[in-house]
Each structure stands twice: as structure tokens, then as C-alpha cells.
Image 1 (cartoon, rainbow, N blue to C red):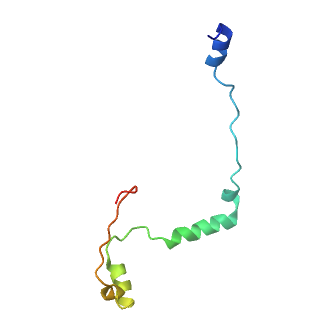
Image 2 (image 1 turned 135 degrees about the horizontal axis):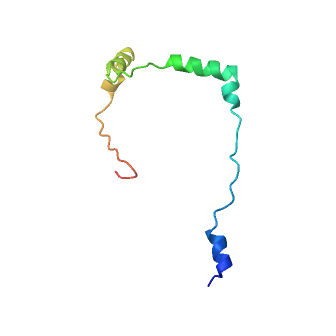
Image 3 (image 1 turned 30 degrees about the vertical axis):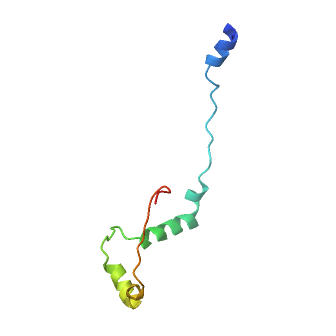
Length: 81
């Protein structure tokens, strides 16, 4: 059994600690800002979900998938399959 004083100590919240402040040096670095600005120009604003680009790539490669034997691909998730 615990005593009243021990019980009170267990019920007390831990003392408040000041938050840890980590300076954001990357945001202040102009080289990082320039790299991030460059990356944002590389990616399209809209995503094209059609297969047109993949078809064009396969055509440019000579359609190598047509030369493969028939394949059955069995896939599963979380180790099932």
C-alpha cells in the first residue's frame, strides 16, 4: 500500500519544461531556398494519369515487352500472397 504523501506525488503532473527551440538554419540559407525554388519548377502542377507517355517510351525502346514470354504476376500486401 502507498502512503498519502506517496500517492500525492504520483498524482502530481511533472514540472513544466521550456520548449526546445531548434533554429531553422535551412530556411535562412539562400542556397537552400534557391534549390527548393528549382525543385518546384521541375514537377508539373497537374498529374497526367494517362498512359500516353509510357506508351511513347515503350515505342521509343522498340516495345521490348512484346518480346517477353507470357508472365503471370501475383502480388499481395502485408506478406500475404
